[in-house]
Each structure stands twice: as C-alpha cells, then as structure tokens.
Image 1 (cartoon, rainbow, N blue to C red):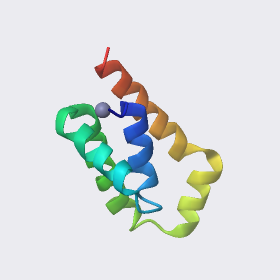
Image 2 (image 1 turned 90 degrees about the horizontal axis):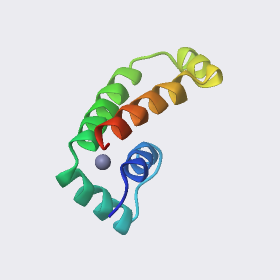
Image 3 (image 1 turned 120 degrees about the vertical axis):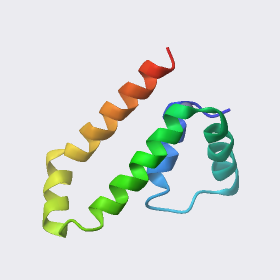
Length: 84
Ligand SMILES: [Zn+2]
C-alpha cells in the first residue's frame, strides 16, 4: 500500500505525465480508503482549474518564488497530522 506522501507525489506528477499501470492502480486503491488524499486530489483538481485561467507570467513568478511548493508542503503537513 502506498503512503499518503507517495500518493500526493504521484497525484502531483499526474498533472505532468501519465501514471503507469501500477502507479495508477496504487493511487486508486489508496483513494478508496484515505479521506485525506481524496481531499488532496479534489483540491489539486480545483487548483488546476483555477490556475488554467491565470496568466503564464503570474505562474512563472509563483514558481520562481517557491510559492507553489510551499503550498504543497502545507497540505502535506495537514495530511500527516490527519494520520497521527
Ligand atoms: Zn492518504
């Protein structure tokens, strides 16, 4: 069984590349039993829809300043808190 950290990483990677068969199956299985990662996926889908409307120049700024990675780390910290 994949850990929450592995699943959130794979869900993030799935935004950039197709997951392999076993990665996809592992994520689907994990999402069946984990509310935290299911919420993460919903938030990721929501954010992806929002970001699709943001100008590229703004996204570049967020990437350069690390804002996107800080946001992901905050969500991961919340997920780890749920599993304790
Ligand atoms: Zn999980």
